[in-house]
Amino acid sequence: MNIFLIPYTWMRHVSVALVCAGATLLAWWLVLAVAVLFPVWTVEWDGAMYITALCVAVAGASTLAEASLRREPLWKRILRTCGSATISGILAMAGYWSWHGMMGPLIFDDVAGADLVEPTLISLRYRVAGFLFAGVYAGVGPLVFRKGAGFFAHMGAGAAAGLMAGATWYVLGYPKSFIGLSDLYLASAGGALAFGSTFGLLAWGIPDSLYAGWMRIVSETRHGRRIPIDAPDGGARERFLGHFPRGLDLFLPAEDGVMELHISVMVTRKQEYRARGLTLKPTLVRRFLERIDLRYDARRPAPLETKLSSGDRLLLGPPNDPTVIEFIMLPREER
Image 1 (cartoon, helix red, strand yellow):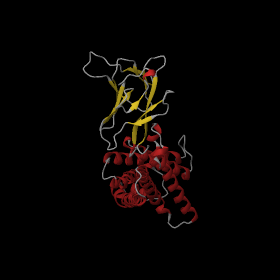
Image 2 (tube, rainbow, N blue to C red):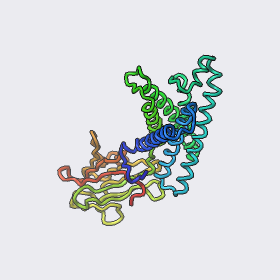
Image 3 (cartoon, helix red, strand yellow):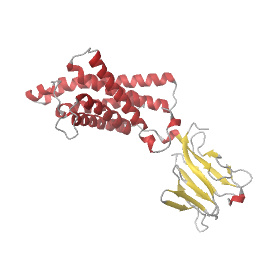
Image 4 (cartoon, rainbow, N blue to C red):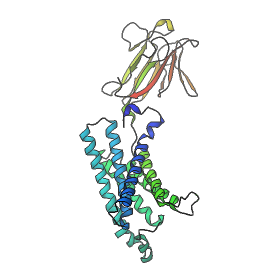
């Protein structure tokens, strides 16, 4: 994954999910290819290999996605990815056989216990626990290399992914379901997609810390000129815009109706961006279904301010021909 190819839009929230879904679908295809072309295991191992492959794929893909976005060295990416996939894979294999070989038969009676260990039986009642445990184990590998950050998110995402995969696999494969495909191959593919996409969507998303705020001039005068708001060390910072001859961060001509100190844009240590109006002249923040007047009010002890979001536009000067500045979020590595 490349942070420069992921814009700061709603797509960034589903990018990791798409990567994980693609990885689990590839894992399903590899398991199917080996089972058909080079059958090296018996039918009793089908479920274990399928579950383990999904865990290996989703754990490795999630870890590799983060390492790639953070531009870690190649050897670290390989080490983290292989380590995460190995941990989740070993736990998934052990968990599968622990449930079907020990815990399950102890919980159910003799008849149900015999059904539990029957590999050809298609029943969500007996398989849902295996999917659930697999999802939880899929979150353990990435969690180790993220140093425990997001523990509950990973555990919850893994459990949700396992349950979603099990339900999808059962509904698509059950002949009497109204959307049933009556095809276990396609049903297992659907389960793999549900497993990867759910885990990638809930466990770890692209953080805002990989992006930084910029101010870009949209008007014809100095069109395209832009400056970053964030400080190099990631701390708080404030940038001033106007036509004062010295000391400003972004100069705008006075002929366009911009005052000496017209507005300032600041970022806090929590990476919250805010705009402040510093003049009595027209200063308007425009966003979807919202207009905010930031003109300085002398009756107030401090300038008016508002929180900024990517895509907001600031209109400075006369309403009929304002100077337009856009606030945008770009990858932090942008220069």
